[in-house]
Amino acid sequence: MRELATIRFIGIRMSRDFITMLLLLVVPIILITVFSIILGEVEGHTGTPIRDETVVLLVLGFQLFGGAITMNYVHQDLFAERKDRLLSLPMNTRLYGFTIMLAGIVYSIVLGMILIAYTTIVFDVNWGNFIWALLVITLMSSLSSIVCLVFTFSVKNFKIAERLSEVYGVGMILLAGMFFPMPDNALINTFNDYVNPLMLAYSSIDQVRDGGLSDGFLYAVLLSVIIIIAFGLLLLTGRRRMP
Amino acid sequence: MSLLIDARTLHTKGNLIGMVKRMTIASIKGIVKRYKDQIALDYVDLDIHEGEVLGLLGPNGAGKTTLIQCLMGIIPFDKGAIHLFGEEGAVFNHVNKKKMGLVTQEITVFEELTAKENLEFFAGVYGLKGEEKKQRVKEALEFVGLSSKAKQSPNKFSGGMKRRLNIACALTHRPKLLIMDEPTVGIDPQSRNHILDAVRKLKEQGTTILYTTHYMEEVQSIATRVVIVDQGQVISEGTVDELIKNIQHEEKIFIDVNDVSTIPIERLQGLEGVKQVQVSGSVVQIISNAGAGNLDRALSIVKETSGVVGIQAEKPNLEDVFLTLTGKQLRDGEDDPS
Ligand SMILES: Nc1ncnc2c1ncn2[C@@H]1O[C@H](COP(=O)(O)OP(=O)(O)O)[C@@H](O)[C@H]1O
Ligand SMILES: [Mg+2]
Image (tube, rainbow over all chains, first blue to last red; front, side, top):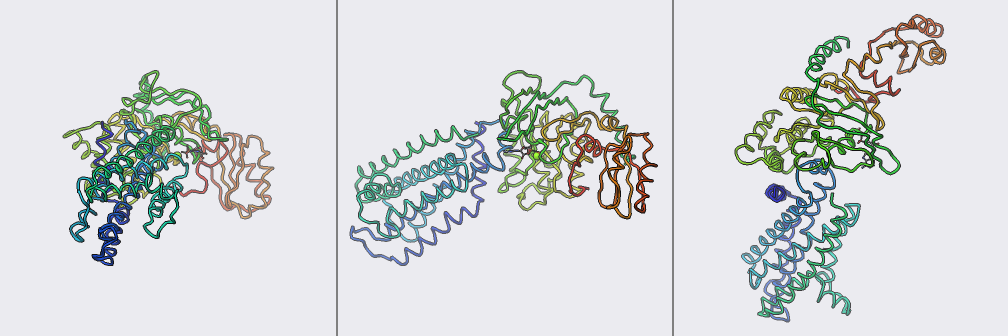
């Protein structure tokens, strides 16, 4: 269990990683602030203020990128410059990799919580049930770290793995129609309804916010199924590549 | 040069007597490691005895790091066997890894952690706890002279300070076998001396050390035994004195000339007993069997075509051992580290 105990130091490292902090905390805060001011109190056709929709989507959207720090640390410590040193230590490297993943997930959850607090306190954004929102953030954060690691393990070149993880994040955001509306295509609609983690997460929070508990629960279950599938891929690819 | 060797002779003899009948801590037998079309290790045999500072000397690309990676179980190898601490069978287990410490060639400390936190990380992984861990971290910081920098992050450190922290990270658990892979590359002379002193102190405390370098001065000053590697092969081993004695039947003649281009190299090479002729700058360097009396003959050949500015004959050192064995320089074009 010495491996798991290293989470303290991995956490300290992540908390001092200012570039990541800038990208995953400062940038969303700026975007949220700008959007909230522009959108004001305008109500959408569903009755929910457009601001609430946009801000919740933004916060969830940034969760798609949270796994970047996990893949970065796994790469640095187990595949690149620090590999020899960490492999010389009396510890199980797979368990250590898993510990990095846990730390990365917690890190992204904490950033998500800070954003939820900020949007609630400053802009009075309605997140519905906080516990539920936290659960959904946890699912999103876990999925992102797992997906990023699958990329890390499945391509040899880490730069390409990083690009793929960006394609994953940006792709889901585009398909969700956050920047511009997607064409009304059956395939895209089905993807957004059943697969796109960003839409599943948003729908889950949205449903619970509007009192549709069972639908909200169903979306979370769908998201969990995707996580389980991704985790299976992680075990498969990790077994092959982990030192 | 001769002064240095004499001082070494005394030093080494003292150690030699103590070394007799010591246990073999690590034994490498017939290791082969291939990278695609390249052979990085070519049937390497190597024993490391308890209490010695074994200098692994070889130029860049000789296979030193690869050998260490095999020894620590970091990479698999294609052939051969490794035994650690006199055990047969599964050697790269946690029990054995706890008895070893690796100072990597690259600086592999965590930049986001302070010096102290770095040491706490490694001490923790090695299973140290509580008061003992605290004490060992403190000792390690003192040992490498970084106590006053404990709370600073290594990204503010000089190259030498980073190297010292890199070493300290492998010390908190007091390894029986410490493996140091080129620990002094690219640092100032002061840090370098600090590190060499540290190695001597660790040896006095009974730590067995495998020290790789391509600086022969370091090996001459700290190693009790030397293994010379080149192109994945062990080409010679012994104490510094033994290695030099093996080539003592040679002498080296340097003739500084006015016009190098006119020197008839082939004629010099053709002299009886001459093993090698090299030209570097304006100096013609001749390695010849000792006592062959080639100084006179070489000089007269050179004088036929060029003026002579200076002449010198030198006792061999480890650099010459390497040159004799491989026909090339240990360091090509690199500056002297000191
Ligand atoms: N991962 C690798 N892939 C391919 N070749 C390698 C790898 N690691 C080392 N080599 C080759 O093996 C040889 C020995 O390298 P190395 O052990 O690093 O030498 P040294 O440490 O003595 O400088 C070199 O020619 C190097 O190019
Ligand atoms: Mg090397």
